[in-house]
Image (cartoon, rainbow, N blue to C red; front, side):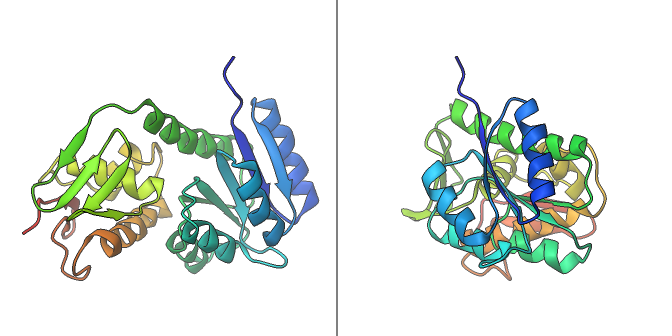
Length: 234
């Protein structure tokens, strides 16, 4: 029997936790709950969830700090941040601290479940494995069996989303993809809007990790007004 996916809810509003727990369990997920950032960080370590729903405005440690500490510890569990505010800055800051996705309150359960399933589906795709070694020919190597990326022999620590964006672009060198293309192909979302900003932030984080000079990238290049593409570098 397949083991249920476990989702950690880190949210200080009990009514929201209750609604999320009810709907997630109805969809067949196991849940764990924390009502402040410190407890959330502790449970993330002990429960080893498959995904975390993380509110930004939390007691003790805010969601930004929780996500930052998770990523610094090497935990690349998918994180969807929940924010009650529409400010672009919150979303961008959350993504820059290592979150994979965001959803703005008030959200529909239908949309939330779609995002949860999309993020978990990417995890399952990674578990299936297969493929072997992808050598770009310029010092950057992707092992698609172990999901490890190395640059000139040194390991590069990527989040799941960054890894998937890199492998997708590197699998189609020279082909330019718009932000909307990437939202559909990598993020598995059939809708757009301000979500396309997510692509820009993820590209920026990825460049900071794999490029010698992120301001003058050699691997992930921009075709102005069109989108992004992968080059084997110089």
